[in-house]
Image (cartoon, rainbow, N blue to C red; front, top):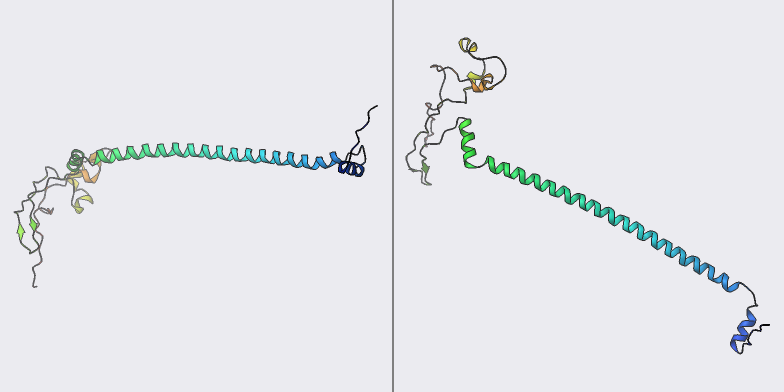
Amino acid sequence: MSRKPELKGRAARLARLIPPGSARGQAARAPFVLLVVVLLGGGLIVLLVLNSALSEGSFQLDDLKQRTKELTDEEQALQRDIDAYSAPHALQRRARELGMVPGGDPAFLAPDGTVKGSPGPAPAAATPLVLAPEALTAPPADTAAAVPSSGTGPASSPAAVAPPATAATPTTAATPIPTPTPGR
């Protein structure tokens, strides 16, 4: 037979307060264990939610980096196009296509009103591409038959058809520009 050891002093008094075989000690542990399990489970759920949010942010960051790279590539391609169009030889070729000619000798006005340099006229273009407004309305009857009516190609546009040289067509190169004189 087993016998419990005798308790002395304070332990004996405490042992008398708690009857033997009661589950009161285990009952006090149940809420504590439940609290610990709930805290651990809640912590794990919070960690899972934080991890998901961080990984979602990482995916968004990767998408934004990829979009930034694409936009940077597009910007560089557009800048190359601008550089190609603004190169001197490209500007010269486009100006000639538009019928522009290099300017003549320039003249400069000094602050006191004197002219420095001797101005010279620009050389005339071989075929003018810019027409007078009256040439854009309707071609004369004799030139209407010479213009093809297919609707395609550069000859079908009114700007590409040169007007016939007549005395009634004014030219801008021969028209002098009146200058105001001071004192009037």
